[in-house]
Image (cartoon, rainbow, N blue to C red; front, side, top):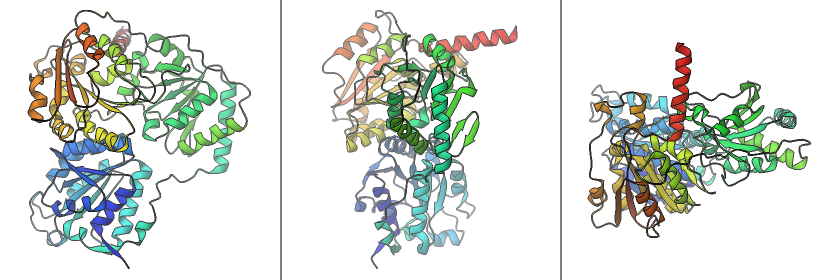
Length: 565
């Protein structure tokens, strides 16, 4: 029977999942494995460090549906674990391949470099087990193909990262290639049809009885790739639809049913009132983290919430084991075949956005996010960073067809710049989006600025807005408004692109300090065309914050005052 190397088998399976680029950092335990990458229809895009490789894989997977990166045993993999934790909690399917010492060395408990000097080799895998859906160290030639299929299936079904340890001596052993002819089964198991039908009937009844039904589209809708299905349900019912900060960009904001972004106390008043007065909330992909809930200031009627998640739905607070995708599909089909007898359509009497800042003088956060409305176009992919970037973008009205995301839950600063490498590479490969935009703070940028080298050498041509507010603004607002530890080193951003790409096309714009300067730049026909690396330094006041942050902060302060009284 035809044979294939175990390493080839792994990379061919990754190719079948739609992966075309593998990220990572070369290391001695993996070098011979890297020879197999291009042999199997994959491109190798090495990165400056393993942390950036893990972030790049995260961004790539959010566009293509899966990703892979390779590191060496020990220091290499540990450097990537911060990124993997983000994969895990944000439901991003990434395969982390780790080049291991040879099996003879492991069996003999030899003291090898990159180990802890104990003669043991399973300690890092045990660490990875806490932040992956499954781990696998390939040692058994006879079951290797089956083991690879099992772990990659887990990755796709769970939509979470997995860990595959592979030494060169095992990677070059051969196995039967027959299994490769059968695609991996990545679909979720079907629902119990009787239970699904009963639940559809119950949900229809709730929709017909509600006097003020609404929809909230949250982050796990995006991670479950159900944006299109939810949009179909929204259109079919005509219910008022909102997003959370994590779900921003998942709803067409030009539709007459769009009500705004709900962030608890950080919401605009009209949005807050409309959501919190609802007697029925279909909450798709709910994720109740602190950043996503306005620091837990959401005040909805929990008895009115129907919560849809990947593997279950909650009705009246009771969990029912029905998968989001299939239940929503059945509900849509039921309404299409037999329209609801009574349904309260959306009546948006408030403005989803109420930001009306001054347009002259010193540049403010409020003006920045309003001004970006005119710059962001259909087909853009926008990545924002933890901090004022993630908060501020909530106030920017999007045209249809814009993808926006950040690392809402894990919140590792520096993520966005690294993720931009993989995201914009995937855009280039797939053509799904036209232009890549990165918005980050200068404090976050300094953690992973080496990623600029990748953006330049791979001709990914991003437009990058660096918010220079002389330090960590969100941290200042939490504690230490004037503390020295919330400052960051001062850089010459004007020379940064040239440092990382001598001879490569790049442009620097700035420092942009006034509303007039920003408006002029954004209106320039030669700016932001997506054909060259462009870096914009936006200078903001050190303590200025987006409006939703101020609204939320004021509400929390008022709550604390009442509590103390």
